Length: 344
Image 1 (tube, one colour):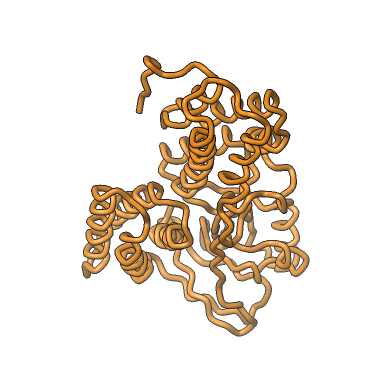
Image 2 (cartoon, helix red, strand yellow):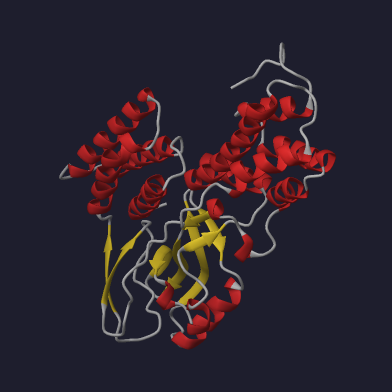
């Protein structure tokens, strides 16, 4: 979407407004101007927030809630029977000293420019993002040592995230900026003068600090105890065998293909919550139509995986247009699980 500059104001707030409303412009453009506005108005809070969004969050625990997403834990590896790609695991499979600090709740600490680049690149490739755990190489080495099987080797341990989820987070940042501009406009109107410190801070608190107070969606799995049976679906044609981690008493039933129930559940959930997502009528109708098509395709006795993947991607894309609510985040998480079942 291109925004014409003709007839637009030239003050700093107007420039931020134009940048935010132009979906074709990177978020960094508006955020850098917010840094400048924070400096000129004396709002240290606005300047610091914009700086963190631009440079990234050095401390995971300080990441705002809108940057916390659901991400499945996965491993890549080799066995005597072949290659394993994208095998899902639970946090309980990790070493004890790691499992207590790692879950499917992932804080995205990267700068917005990096997140935009990651989302664009993986959308073009049609792939999930693989985000490594802290000290992932050391964790994999420890797990291989503990396993003690020379014919099994874990190569990577990572979080897997669909690019549409990253787009959703970036959309929330853009929404925050839009609300910040809207709050200032409600206070100072169309004036091209800089707002005061109090006006800037008030708008910041309403748009940034007051937003996204809901807890992030964290989908947990039932714990995997010794002696339990866990079904693992291979994701690629050359995946053979499975990786047994932690105990020889854990039985894994390994099958090629995918579980259609995840797709049916995803399509059904989207159909149910679509009216609550705050979409425009045309967007809601499109999302409901795509969810219905996905449900019908997944119900086919011999479903075609390429068609299912296209429909899943279309539904995920439609969800990114929704407001950042608990329902939309739950649907995005369910969509990730469904797409994982289809394979990367």
